[in-house]
Image (cartoon, rainbow over all chains, first blue to last red; front, top):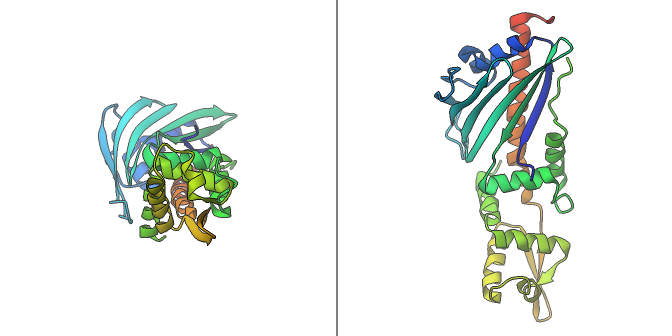
Amino acid sequence: MARTLRFEALYPYTAEQVWAALTDREAIGDWLMPNDFEPRVGHLFTFTTKPAPGFDGIVQCEVLELEPPRRLAYSWKGGGIDTVVVYSLAAEGGNTRLVMEQSGFTGLRGWMVSRILGGGWKKIIGQGLREAASRVVDGKYRRER
Amino acid sequence: MDEQATNEVFRALADPTRRALLTMLSEEAQPVSALTAHFEMTQPAVSQHLKVLKDAGLVTQRRNGRNQIYALDPEPLRHVADWLEQHVEFWTTRFDNLGRLLREKHGTDA
């Protein structure tokens, strides 16, 4: 069953340049969230952001894989989800394709994600849910520069 | 987003029996007796699950002679869609940021 959110983007930069933005604490703070990341497998770190209902604004993470400049994975726990985020980089004609997959949605929210992504409820759900599902499945975010 | 309504819908959906009931009701509106036939539990137990679904707004109930007919109301599932949508929005915004950051750092040419 589909339990993975996937985003894809093509950036007109080298894999090393994109990798730096994914693994430099200050850069990550600029594009993702303030953090205390270190590029070291086993390093425990947190993202901190504005709290929202049902989310205290803290994401607990651990670096799981680090393979410069190709693959980075860390756990991502917070706001009721316990997941793993994996970034993969691949050179593509002078550009770099970045694929981010967030997987391991478990429990109820995982069940919902899998049902929505799997389209099993398409005939009973409203337009809003269909749109949300198709945006994820089709990889809504796509930058071809 | 209405957090309390969202939590109520998630809570109602947390139980496999209730999810199965919703799937059955998505086929057609049915009396509790027909629904009970699918489960190894008593009719009052099924009624109790239907009440939770009703409280969450996922199921409506009407009388037809001696029977109570239950029907699905998918509207509250929008709360679930909103939750996923927020998640998608989060990453969409962040990857926009990443593209902007790379442009600022390295210009528009690779």
